[in-house]
Length: 330
Image (cartoon, rainbow, N blue to C red; front, top):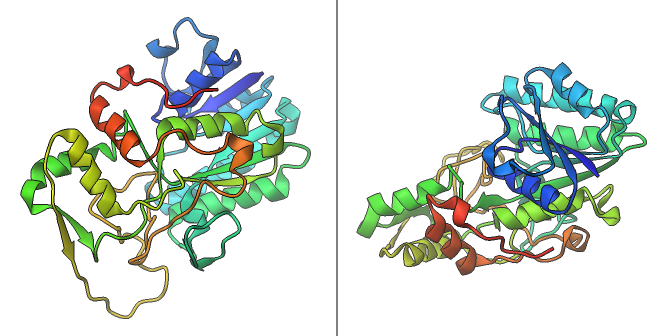
Protein backbone atom coordinates (compact mmCIF):
# COMPACT_ATOMS: atom_id res chain seq x y z
CA UNK A 1 0.00 0.00 0.00
CA UNK A 2 1.16 3.52 -0.79
CA UNK A 3 0.29 5.85 2.09
CA UNK A 4 0.49 9.62 2.35
CA UNK A 5 0.83 10.93 5.91
CA UNK A 6 0.53 14.49 7.16
CA UNK A 7 1.72 15.21 10.68
CA UNK A 8 4.03 12.23 10.36
CA UNK A 9 6.87 13.81 12.33
CA UNK A 10 4.64 14.66 15.30
CA UNK A 11 3.70 12.94 18.53
CA UNK A 12 0.98 10.69 17.05
CA UNK A 13 1.90 10.68 13.38
CA UNK A 14 5.46 9.44 13.84
CA UNK A 15 4.12 6.32 15.57
CA UNK A 16 1.72 5.73 12.68
CA UNK A 17 4.55 6.06 10.15
CA UNK A 18 6.60 3.55 12.17
CA UNK A 19 3.75 1.04 11.98
CA UNK A 20 3.17 1.55 8.27
CA UNK A 21 6.84 0.99 7.50
CA UNK A 22 7.10 -2.01 9.84
CA UNK A 23 4.16 -3.64 8.06
CA UNK A 24 5.78 -3.24 4.66
CA UNK A 25 3.88 -0.26 3.33
CA UNK A 26 5.44 2.58 1.34
CA UNK A 27 5.07 5.94 3.06
CA UNK A 28 5.19 9.42 1.59
CA UNK A 29 5.83 11.79 4.48
CA UNK A 30 4.41 15.27 3.88
CA UNK A 31 6.42 17.69 5.98
CA UNK A 32 7.94 21.15 6.15
CA UNK A 33 11.25 19.50 7.01
CA UNK A 34 13.95 19.53 4.37
CA UNK A 35 15.49 16.20 5.36
CA UNK A 36 14.00 12.85 6.33
CA UNK A 37 14.02 12.39 10.13
CA UNK A 38 16.67 9.96 11.32
CA UNK A 39 14.11 7.61 12.91
CA UNK A 40 12.83 6.76 9.41
CA UNK A 41 16.24 6.14 7.86
CA UNK A 42 16.50 2.78 6.14
CA UNK A 43 12.72 2.40 5.92
CA UNK A 44 10.45 2.73 2.90
CA UNK A 45 9.66 6.33 3.81
CA UNK A 46 10.19 9.23 1.42
CA UNK A 47 9.94 12.92 2.18
CA UNK A 48 7.65 15.25 0.26
CA UNK A 49 8.47 18.81 1.24
CA UNK A 50 5.39 20.97 1.61
CA UNK A 51 3.28 23.01 3.96
CA UNK A 52 -0.36 22.57 4.95
CA UNK A 53 -0.62 26.33 4.65
CA UNK A 54 0.01 25.85 0.93
CA UNK A 55 -2.93 23.68 -0.27
CA UNK A 56 -1.41 23.18 -3.71
CA UNK A 57 1.56 21.37 -2.20
CA UNK A 58 -0.60 18.81 -0.39
CA UNK A 59 -2.74 18.30 -3.49
CA UNK A 60 0.41 17.54 -5.46
CA UNK A 61 1.62 15.11 -2.79
CA UNK A 62 -1.63 13.12 -3.09
CA UNK A 63 -0.95 11.97 -6.66
CA UNK A 64 -0.32 8.24 -6.92
CA UNK A 65 -1.15 7.48 -3.30
CA UNK A 66 -3.73 4.92 -2.17
CA UNK A 67 -4.49 5.83 1.45
CA UNK A 68 -4.25 9.30 2.95
CA UNK A 69 -3.70 9.63 6.71
CA UNK A 70 -4.55 13.25 7.52
CA UNK A 71 -3.09 13.59 11.01
CA UNK A 72 -1.54 17.03 10.78
CA UNK A 73 -3.26 20.38 10.80
CA UNK A 74 -2.53 24.07 10.49
CA UNK A 75 -1.80 25.18 14.04
CA UNK A 76 -5.26 25.76 15.39
CA UNK A 77 -5.06 28.75 17.71
CA UNK A 78 -7.85 30.92 16.33
CA UNK A 79 -11.16 30.75 14.42
CA UNK A 80 -9.29 31.96 11.32
CA UNK A 81 -6.88 29.03 11.54
CA UNK A 82 -9.79 26.66 12.07
CA UNK A 83 -11.40 27.93 8.86
CA UNK A 84 -8.16 27.37 6.96
CA UNK A 85 -8.13 23.78 8.18
CA UNK A 86 -11.71 23.26 7.00
CA UNK A 87 -10.97 24.85 3.63
CA UNK A 88 -7.94 22.59 3.23
CA UNK A 89 -9.95 19.43 3.94
CA UNK A 90 -12.62 20.54 1.47
CA UNK A 91 -10.00 20.97 -1.26
CA UNK A 92 -8.42 17.64 -0.36
CA UNK A 93 -11.77 15.87 -0.67
CA UNK A 94 -12.22 17.24 -4.17
CA UNK A 95 -8.85 15.84 -5.17
CA UNK A 96 -9.11 12.36 -3.62
CA UNK A 97 -10.59 10.54 -6.61
CA UNK A 98 -8.48 12.17 -9.35
CA UNK A 99 -5.32 11.51 -7.30
CA UNK A 100 -6.11 7.79 -7.08
CA UNK A 101 -6.69 7.72 -3.33
CA UNK A 102 -9.22 5.09 -2.24
CA UNK A 103 -9.46 5.93 1.46
CA UNK A 104 -8.80 8.90 3.73
CA UNK A 105 -8.34 8.61 7.49
CA UNK A 106 -9.14 11.84 9.32
CA UNK A 107 -8.10 12.54 12.90
CA UNK A 108 -10.93 14.37 14.61
CA UNK A 109 -11.49 14.81 18.35
CA UNK A 110 -13.62 13.25 21.06
CA UNK A 111 -14.88 16.76 21.77
CA UNK A 112 -17.12 16.39 18.70
CA UNK A 113 -19.13 13.82 20.66
CA UNK A 114 -19.86 16.51 23.25
CA UNK A 115 -20.68 15.92 26.91
CA UNK A 116 -22.58 12.60 26.88
CA UNK A 117 -25.95 12.09 28.54
CA UNK A 118 -24.54 8.98 30.23
CA UNK A 119 -21.25 7.20 30.79
CA UNK A 120 -19.78 4.98 29.62
CA UNK A 121 -20.63 6.31 26.17
CA UNK A 122 -20.11 5.16 22.60
CA UNK A 123 -20.52 6.62 19.12
CA UNK A 124 -24.30 6.41 19.35
CA UNK A 125 -24.65 8.18 22.70
CA UNK A 126 -26.47 11.50 22.43
CA UNK A 127 -24.70 14.55 23.87
CA UNK A 128 -26.20 16.39 26.82
CA UNK A 129 -24.13 19.41 25.81
CA UNK A 130 -22.66 20.08 22.36
CA UNK A 131 -19.37 21.94 22.49
CA UNK A 132 -19.13 25.15 20.51
CA UNK A 133 -15.48 26.17 20.52
CA UNK A 134 -13.75 26.79 17.19
CA UNK A 135 -11.59 23.66 17.47
CA UNK A 136 -14.57 21.34 17.91
CA UNK A 137 -16.58 23.10 15.20
CA UNK A 138 -13.72 22.71 12.75
CA UNK A 139 -13.42 18.98 13.42
CA UNK A 140 -17.18 18.51 13.23
CA UNK A 141 -17.38 20.41 9.94
CA UNK A 142 -14.64 18.24 8.42
CA UNK A 143 -16.46 15.08 9.48
CA UNK A 144 -19.59 16.32 7.73
CA UNK A 145 -17.67 17.22 4.59
CA UNK A 146 -16.25 13.71 4.41
CA UNK A 147 -19.67 12.14 4.87
CA UNK A 148 -21.32 14.39 2.30
CA UNK A 149 -18.68 14.97 -0.37
CA UNK A 150 -16.20 12.08 -0.43
CA UNK A 151 -18.17 10.40 -3.21
CA UNK A 152 -16.56 7.21 -4.46
CA UNK A 153 -13.80 7.35 -1.85
CA UNK A 154 -13.83 5.57 1.51
CA UNK A 155 -13.27 7.53 4.69
CA UNK A 156 -12.72 6.72 8.35
CA UNK A 157 -12.87 9.19 11.23
CA UNK A 158 -10.91 8.71 14.44
CA UNK A 159 -11.93 10.71 17.54
CA UNK A 160 -9.22 10.28 20.19
CA UNK A 161 -9.58 11.31 23.78
CA UNK A 162 -6.66 12.72 25.75
CA UNK A 163 -3.51 11.24 24.21
CA UNK A 164 -0.52 10.62 26.46
CA UNK A 165 2.82 8.86 26.28
CA UNK A 166 6.52 9.44 25.59
CA UNK A 167 7.09 12.61 23.61
CA UNK A 168 3.94 14.40 24.78
CA UNK A 169 5.06 18.00 25.14
CA UNK A 170 1.68 19.03 26.53
CA UNK A 171 0.75 16.39 29.08
CA UNK A 172 4.37 16.15 30.12
CA UNK A 173 3.56 19.33 32.02
CA UNK A 174 1.62 17.19 34.48
CA UNK A 175 4.84 15.69 35.78
CA UNK A 176 6.37 19.16 36.05
CA UNK A 177 3.25 20.25 37.93
CA UNK A 178 3.62 17.40 40.38
CA UNK A 179 7.21 18.40 41.04
CA UNK A 180 6.23 22.02 41.70
CA UNK A 181 3.05 21.47 43.70
CA UNK A 182 4.38 18.63 45.86
CA UNK A 183 2.51 18.28 49.10
CA UNK A 184 0.02 21.00 48.12
CA UNK A 185 -1.54 18.62 45.64
CA UNK A 186 -3.01 19.18 42.20
CA UNK A 187 -6.13 21.35 42.40
CA UNK A 188 -9.33 19.89 40.98
CA UNK A 189 -12.71 21.32 40.23
CA UNK A 190 -14.98 19.51 42.67
CA UNK A 191 -13.52 16.16 43.76
CA UNK A 192 -11.60 15.39 40.57
CA UNK A 193 -14.11 12.60 39.97
CA UNK A 194 -14.71 13.39 36.30
CA UNK A 195 -13.70 10.52 34.02
CA UNK A 196 -10.35 11.04 32.29
CA UNK A 197 -10.83 9.87 28.68
CA UNK A 198 -7.21 8.80 28.20
CA UNK A 199 -5.61 6.81 25.40
CA UNK A 200 -1.98 5.77 25.14
CA UNK A 201 -0.27 7.10 22.02
CA UNK A 202 0.86 3.67 20.78
CA UNK A 203 -2.69 2.32 21.07
CA UNK A 204 -4.05 5.29 19.18
CA UNK A 205 -1.41 4.87 16.47
CA UNK A 206 -2.42 1.24 16.03
CA UNK A 207 -6.07 2.23 15.65
CA UNK A 208 -5.18 4.95 13.13
CA UNK A 209 -3.07 2.50 11.14
CA UNK A 210 -5.87 -0.09 11.05
CA UNK A 211 -8.40 2.58 10.08
CA UNK A 212 -6.61 2.78 6.75
CA UNK A 213 -6.17 -0.96 6.20
CA UNK A 214 -9.21 -2.77 7.61
CA UNK A 215 -12.12 -3.22 5.22
CA UNK A 216 -14.80 -2.88 7.90
CA UNK A 217 -13.45 0.48 9.05
CA UNK A 218 -14.67 2.22 5.89
CA UNK A 219 -17.40 4.78 6.51
CA UNK A 220 -17.06 4.50 10.27
CA UNK A 221 -16.49 6.99 13.09
CA UNK A 222 -14.56 5.74 16.13
CA UNK A 223 -14.52 7.29 19.61
CA UNK A 224 -11.26 6.09 21.16
CA UNK A 225 -10.17 5.98 24.80
CA UNK A 226 -8.72 3.24 26.96
CA UNK A 227 -12.26 2.22 27.87
CA UNK A 228 -11.71 2.63 31.59
CA UNK A 229 -13.47 4.86 34.09
CA UNK A 230 -10.43 6.24 35.87
CA UNK A 231 -10.96 9.77 37.14
CA UNK A 232 -8.57 12.69 36.88
CA UNK A 233 -7.94 12.26 40.59
CA UNK A 234 -6.97 8.61 40.01
CA UNK A 235 -4.55 9.62 37.29
CA UNK A 236 -2.95 12.35 39.37
CA UNK A 237 -2.36 9.81 42.13
CA UNK A 238 -0.87 7.23 39.78
CA UNK A 239 1.60 9.62 38.18
CA UNK A 240 3.50 10.41 41.38
CA UNK A 241 3.60 6.73 42.35
CA UNK A 242 5.52 5.92 39.18
CA UNK A 243 7.56 9.11 39.33
CA UNK A 244 8.91 8.22 42.77
CA UNK A 245 7.16 11.20 44.37
CA UNK A 246 4.32 11.69 46.81
CA UNK A 247 1.39 13.78 45.72
CA UNK A 248 -1.82 14.81 47.36
CA UNK A 249 -4.95 16.25 45.82
CA UNK A 250 -6.48 19.63 46.49
CA UNK A 251 -10.22 19.63 45.73
CA UNK A 252 -11.77 23.04 45.40
CA UNK A 253 -15.28 24.33 44.95
CA UNK A 254 -16.39 26.93 42.45
CA UNK A 255 -19.55 28.95 42.19
CA UNK A 256 -20.98 29.69 38.77
CA UNK A 257 -22.93 32.66 37.55
CA UNK A 258 -25.68 32.16 35.01
CA UNK A 259 -24.37 31.26 31.57
CA UNK A 260 -25.57 29.52 28.49
CA UNK A 261 -24.67 25.83 27.96
CA UNK A 262 -21.43 25.38 26.09
CA UNK A 263 -20.06 28.80 26.95
CA UNK A 264 -17.41 27.57 29.40
CA UNK A 265 -15.10 26.43 26.65
CA UNK A 266 -11.93 26.88 28.66
CA UNK A 267 -13.13 25.14 31.80
CA UNK A 268 -10.82 22.20 32.61
CA UNK A 269 -11.53 19.17 34.78
CA UNK A 270 -8.16 19.60 36.45
CA UNK A 271 -5.11 21.78 36.25
CA UNK A 272 -3.47 19.72 33.51
CA UNK A 273 -2.25 21.80 30.55
CA UNK A 274 -4.68 21.89 27.66
CA UNK A 275 -3.49 20.52 24.34
CA UNK A 276 -4.64 19.75 20.85
CA UNK A 277 -5.82 16.40 22.14
CA UNK A 278 -7.80 17.80 25.04
CA UNK A 279 -8.89 21.29 24.02
CA UNK A 280 -12.26 22.10 25.52
CA UNK A 281 -12.72 18.48 26.48
CA UNK A 282 -14.65 19.82 29.42
CA UNK A 283 -17.19 22.61 29.39
CA UNK A 284 -18.88 21.78 32.68
CA UNK A 285 -17.99 19.99 35.91
CA UNK A 286 -18.57 16.80 33.95
CA UNK A 287 -16.18 15.61 31.31
CA UNK A 288 -16.21 13.88 27.95
CA UNK A 289 -16.14 10.14 28.49
CA UNK A 290 -16.22 7.21 26.14
CA UNK A 291 -15.46 3.56 25.93
CA UNK A 292 -13.34 2.44 23.02
CA UNK A 293 -16.62 2.53 21.16
CA UNK A 294 -19.05 -0.12 20.01
CA UNK A 295 -17.23 -0.31 16.67
CA UNK A 296 -13.76 -0.80 18.15
CA UNK A 297 -13.36 -4.28 16.64
CA UNK A 298 -12.88 -2.73 13.21
CA UNK A 299 -9.85 -0.86 14.50
CA UNK A 300 -8.10 -3.58 16.39
CA UNK A 301 -10.26 -4.20 19.46
CA UNK A 302 -9.36 -3.13 22.96
CA UNK A 303 -6.26 -1.03 23.69
CA UNK A 304 -3.20 -2.89 24.92
CA UNK A 305 -2.22 -0.29 27.53
CA UNK A 306 -4.42 0.66 30.45
CA UNK A 307 -4.31 3.07 33.38
CA UNK A 308 -1.44 2.38 35.76
CA UNK A 309 0.60 0.45 33.21
CA UNK A 310 0.48 3.22 30.61
CA UNK A 311 1.22 5.96 33.12
CA UNK A 312 4.11 3.91 34.51
CA UNK A 313 5.61 3.57 31.03
CA UNK A 314 5.14 7.25 30.39
CA UNK A 315 6.81 8.32 33.62
CA UNK A 316 9.62 5.82 33.19
CA UNK A 317 10.44 7.06 29.72
CA UNK A 318 10.08 10.81 30.16
CA UNK A 319 12.98 12.30 28.27
CA UNK A 320 13.89 8.86 26.93
CA UNK A 321 11.14 8.26 24.40
CA UNK A 322 13.40 6.32 22.06
CA UNK A 323 13.65 3.57 24.65
CA UNK A 324 9.92 2.90 24.60
CA UNK A 325 8.78 -0.43 23.30
CA UNK A 326 5.45 -0.94 21.59
CA UNK A 327 2.58 -1.74 23.92
CA UNK A 328 0.81 -3.92 21.41
CA UNK A 329 1.38 -6.54 18.78
CA UNK A 330 0.13 -6.71 15.22
